[in-house]
View: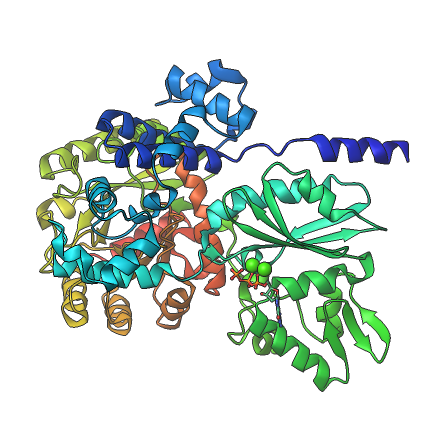
Length: 588
Ligand code: DGT
Ligand code: CA
Ligand code: CA
């Protein structure tokens, strides 16, 4: 009992460490509010850069030992270090609060709309008194934007479209949700009488975005969940509070559903709240067909519970092997499990190397030796350096001359490395007409050419498709990078016929990328399945712009698992010798 109350006291008073994402979000907000206020762009840029640095930091800021250590982070000076310290201590910034009193809260959201930068947002505010999305919607409906300079009919139409899309409920990147979900899970685990806490819902299924968090808490005996949640610093509000179920809203607006269950029901509850809804329906039908009843408390024959403590117990009682959460989407996984034909899903440790990474030679943040060291630290055996080709969009893109020098640099570096190979590569722009931004003469000297679209996203489908097909016909192209161009929450996939691209990739042959950047995760799970069905190997690639971003590969693997991929379906899960041979087949 004494031990228990000690844990209780620790659980109740331990403040939740502020997630790095919250620090990054505060800096982003500073930058936005300064921009709307018309502040100087260097100050704005400093906050934006700091947000990016904090977001890709592999370690929690709360673990740093004070200002001195924070100051050591590359790109973070003493002023920003003090701001981080203030955030960690007080969870806010005085300067941010002052700005908030000057700039209406709703104006910030307008910056996310297409065509609206700080200058236009300021104009909307000063000329029309617009304070947010609703005001803008009304102003558009009443044709009041006509009188403002710089708001032509095309922009007005784009704004109307974007405003209706923005009305959809907010979703969070999986990587952002993780920064809030995992500390909350750990906090709940520290409470007395709690034996198990799992994050369920779409988060556990590894979806690329998450609508809300669902946690299942298993406790022996009573648990005052509501007080526990109120005592957690990130919780802003409890929207529902009962003995077995609470809903909370976090400081950033994220909704959290928490259920408390007894040990006998822990597996059943976890299964139920992991979902998906459609998968759950199928499972209950399967139980019914066997004269059983499945719900969040267990699997029952009449009133007797025959399984419930663990998920595997329930699956076994229903005659099924383990079904990984990533597969529970009602895409045929239950039938495949029944037939014993579920794929042996790829795992992070299966990856042997990475075929898409940048260095400070183009827009990366670290020089090649640092990137290589980071790859080795991740136990990878090879890494392709694929800096950008020279192009309007990328300021430091490589032309043929600089790429030739980088090739020499890689040859020299490889001389010094044991048990690791640096592959020579480039990420080459596909121009609007399907030509590539670099000539064959230099591309032929590379081990891997990653071709990518970085402009003209809104061509009509037929034109976009033939643009890509034309690029894939080029003799040196090995991999089509981020094949749909989507940016989660920002940019829809471009219009293309994937059937034709997959058929071409298969015939050629060349490979498709699953880009692991948290906002890309491109291809999605459905396209991964299509690639597999067409027999096209997938490169699960980091697209890292710093060593720390190699950690994003874990997200790519989650998505690959959702796409039913095994290690043998993934190009860079094969040993280097095989990868080299396969890349050689892409040379016509
Ligand atoms: P999200 O939050 O939109 O990313 O997606 P989920 O899948 O996390 O959905 P959510 O949070 O509404 O519910 C979590 C899981 O709980 C869901 O996958 C299945 C289960 N669940 C929740 N409500 C219901 C329901 O009314 N009926 C059924 N069959 N299952 C439910
Ligand atoms: Ca959810
Ligand atoms: Ca939920």
